[in-house]
Image 1 (cartoon, rainbow, N blue to C red):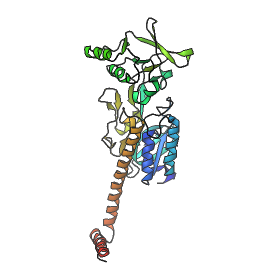
Image 2: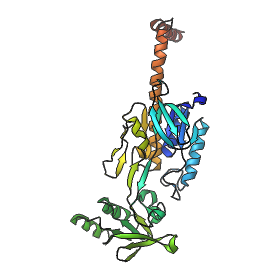
Image 3: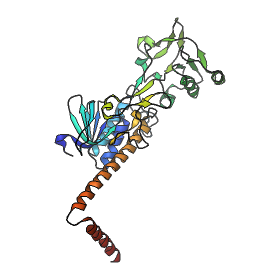
Image 4: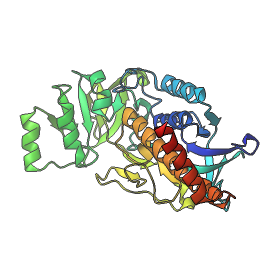
Length: 343
């Protein structure tokens, strides 16, 4: 690593659970690694991280701070800022150039993309203000926190019926708001009735908050009817943050469940571009925090192994070009091993 040139084995773009977990693993393999991050995690509106063993209920920003400290223990560098351009170079070693919003340029042998996703919410007044609090989407992340409450399910797609049936595990007071968008099938009507889910027709005009800014109190339908609620479930459209990666030849693809777009990778996180990996929500829209961290570790191991193979080939070329010669030195090493066994 030549720090004067900001050159690293790996540059990780994105400092959430996936990026930091990858950087930790890379640091422990004695790789030089830089993590580019603006410090605005997607889950920052939430009061706590859930389902993360040993970190249950931890504030998302505290989790990031702890992760950064772990990375720095092994020589990893946290670079504050936002990547605005990523490009391949003609350099056989520093194959990638990452440019930040302040003009900083980072060179690297490999790239790991962990930029996460953005939640595209319905344009309903009052909804975004409560996002991550009383407005939520994942029952496994936040269902426990709203258990036994009056929970509304905002109809946004055919998946809304499934959401209503799923949240019924956490409360027996579930209301599906069709929102002039969802029309259950005959079978779904029966399922909803069997589970005791209430169904309300009409479009949702706005989300109501107590005292114009407090906790959620319900929704108002077009026409003025108010449906009292304590929590509102919304299925956003997930869009992976991939914009600046088009210059590398990477483009998002539709998720098979129809919930948004993400980068396609193999099981180890490798993208279709040689030398570039992706992990976390940018590559899998459905991951929670813990599996996102795990995916970063997996990608880091794959990147390290790829670098090792490259280094082996370089060492082999140098070894074979040496005056000793490949066959004679290999024989010397082999004979030395045999001699040690005999002795």
